[in-house]
Image 1 (cartoon, rainbow, N blue to C red):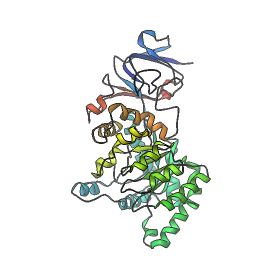
Image 2 (cartoon, one colour):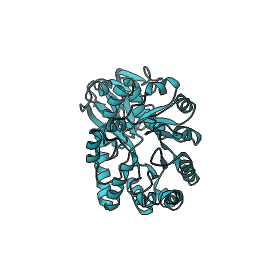
Image 3 (cartoon, rainbow, N blue to C red):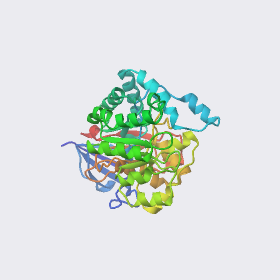
Image 4 (cartoon, helix red, strand yellow):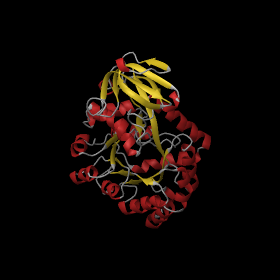
Length: 392
């Protein structure tokens, strides 16, 4: 058994109120012991038990590794010109996804994997130790299957998103073409992708899929063992959140436009409201008010939504800062949502916290307080990032 003691931690975020103060279960002048990649002990630095190896945190803060429960890393090309046009006053619409579809279909497997590896490295540097990745930019049987096969080499959290938009070759034929594509998504494409996926997702919004189509597709995924999640209420208010609760989706993502009924439904369910600050930032859209969700008792996550069209960021600290400034999170709520909230959105109990038995996925900051992640936006405050494998 290999053991490592980390001592002299300025502030240790455990996300377990039974271990420390407040929502984050915070301990000051703390220490922790890791055995074979798992948290074995936490407490005061003066009381730390003996271990084979020691690390002095020199007063820096340590928190659980960030959990990014919503990202789109399997794509080619970019949409910088579209971003510039949006900043000049054009509105964001789901149809821009189609330009990425064309580039992704034309890319080789090697090019797609190299892009994912590069983005995953950026995520790791920003403190993300677990990430989800979706398909959704191939929209053919072969392209969706290869995207998930590649992604599954790099993360266990893979999501089949054949229902991202209806590709042009189907959409251009009106209702008949759309119906054919929905049928493809829930049959042949599902069969080809399911061996490489854990989750199934649908973009249920204007310009994408309506609630009835989304229900059909998600139920088809559930029938073959994929767990559902959904893009809901990003572009306008609709029935996406209520559908998420109805189908016990792990998360309803975006939640930009919510009524009190939507919030109450989330609060009374197992569905996590995953907010995506980068999307509102990059599209100049209205920010959802996270305080309404927290006050109602809903479970809230923050994710990067890394994608080339509406949130091309891999930085969780950036998303935390925007969430605090513009979504009305407190710093503590934002940290919890980027760690424990993300874990709950993936229905994982081994990550997102530093309780006994948790994976030793952790981030050491250059400062003594996690508050600086929101207080000093745009500054790299990541000293080091570790996963359980580093200690095994």
